[in-house]
Image (cartoon, rainbow, N blue to C red; front, side):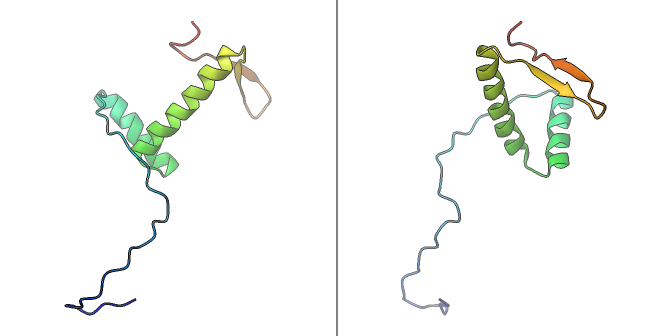
Length: 92
């Protein structure tokens, strides 16, 4: 629908592409090096720094849940060499 300037017709509400979600804003203090790491990750992944932090939270939640159930994590390189992954600050 096209509206002309000065038109008295009520404006139609646009449907949102995604449903609105309630958000909570936080403040985070990072060292300059930590901020550079966050920016580098966001640029490499092609996402925002907020998305990096949300995804990191999801991943850490998964690690905590799985580790609590006895799971371990490994990295496997292209030659098949396995290396145990230890998450600092959890399960030490």
